[in-house]
Image: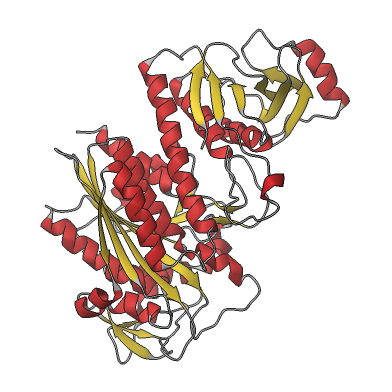
Length: 494
């Protein structure tokens, strides 16, 4: 993870500046005297630079070894924080092999400065844990990011730099967990790793093992995990500061590998199902980040963890299971398993929250449906809710975080498709609107009086295409930043 520094002048032999387009002409944007724009523009035009977003061009520098131009697109009076975040991240990705870089991108406020620091830190990522003989050929990411700013000596800027380090640290944890192969990440090993991480931040940990889950009546988690040699778990982490202003529960789907069970998935693309625990990783790491930031917000993080495998003990289509709390579900499709483990955890989270004095909101995060990616693509996640005010607060937080979420409805007329003739409800309904049907299923396990959000991150959680901005190939860490921003917004209001 890169250390984030602030400086008033260039302190590295690698300098990153912006380049954009104004009236069809390239223009360099840096705000520092070390850049000879006239000479550099000649070179940039000569090699066909466009200044488009995600374009990164490296040239030898005069006062530095290397000068790096990161595209900002059309030049505006004020660049959005997310555009700056992505531009810094794109440059950082391309600078693997260098130890440090100074980022001199245009900004007029600490908010924009924070985005630059965050993007650069997020872009300095690599995952090499499972490389063998080829590991020595890999270039290490940046170890130091220096942001050139006139705000360097202000407390707000220093806090922003520290926050960028925390966000990057916890995002990298999420990415690492997602990228870890299922041979090495099981429900048990996930819990043990998070227990070790939690000790660093003073976060309490409770691990409910498979025997306790059976005894306690967690039929969803047991039903999904019973076909695997790796038994299921329910992980609970708690951050409870004194005089907390609000209390939230975050619940994340934790299927460490999803074969589809006896509704076996096609082989093509199944390797990406190691990412089916992205929600669990995001919510647990978000609790860690909130604890590191010492926000006056109490948070319980819940990760129902199971491996959905094929075996003689796997749940069969038409089996009936009993969710924690007593509601029964006919499992028509064992590949609609995420909603089953989430149902157990949502009921338990609400129960624990009530004992602690009540919840101001409960949020589940899940790679839940392929229908989400069909509807919104691979970069925009869905939000469903029973409380428009809470949803609005979250969407404001997501916008500040630079994560794309879009509100989706929960149409009452689709609820009837979940009816079962032999159980309280079935685990699948109409195929059309499948993302919404899954949300309606989860809503059955929510107290109507508790503000609730369902975040379906199926498409954006795992990037199978090309790296872009600060987003690498593989696990992305989506939702963590928005959850942290939600807690920050809540802590700023009385």
